[in-house]
Image 1 (tube, rainbow, N blue to C red):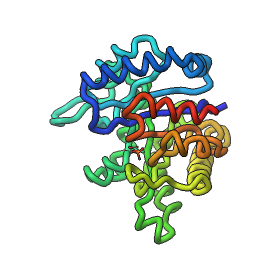
Image 2: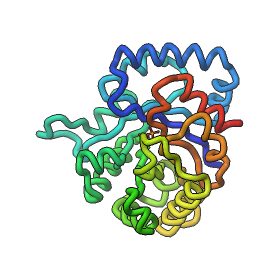
Image 3: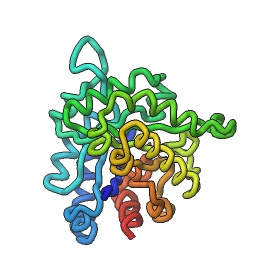
Image 4: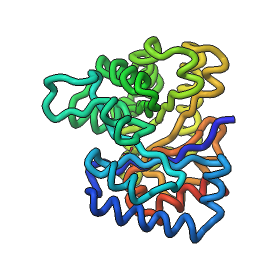
Length: 262
Ligand code: PEP
């Protein structure tokens, strides 16, 4: 059984103080509406939040023993070195991260990260015992040219040879995030999202075997909101969401998780 993962990418929003307020509010909301806390504690759903680096510790303190995992939005592939402005995987592990997003479209398209750095980052995350959330997705132009599947294949081919079948089964998370749907309010149709996620699962199966394909979690990301979450969550190959804007308020983040459970 693949556990549904609802993960929030805060991007460059919510500093340490705002993260503390968020954590306090999330605690109140989770405890008031006991059914969500129970679902998470009983393993029906997993919640994770990826704040900016400087907010990780304050969010962790505010969340206390709430069953919410923490993650980061990026890391460097080396353990340490003269890489001004970068953060390494061991540093993220030390502050309590379980997840690290790799290859987010904003890293690829705003900061120019290419396919060739992804494998090293993923290896760094896996080596530290954390879980990479590897993002792939096509630009609108690529979609219009009918290149969606070949783009996904190219992006996956850059990393799959560097991940063992066992890691694919137990740790790897892939997030299908069509670039045209991120932060635009334009969500992929349920059918298109399902088809892309199914295709990604097939690529993992081809690289790591049937079990890896069955077990790997594939998320959808791109303008997920409480209003569109339940139809997407019902798709056979969608095992969770990577949520940007709607994860910045406890109410909408939990609204998405609740809609997915319904
Ligand atoms: C994201 O940042 O990964 C994302 C999917 O953003 P949004 O939900 O705002 O589209």
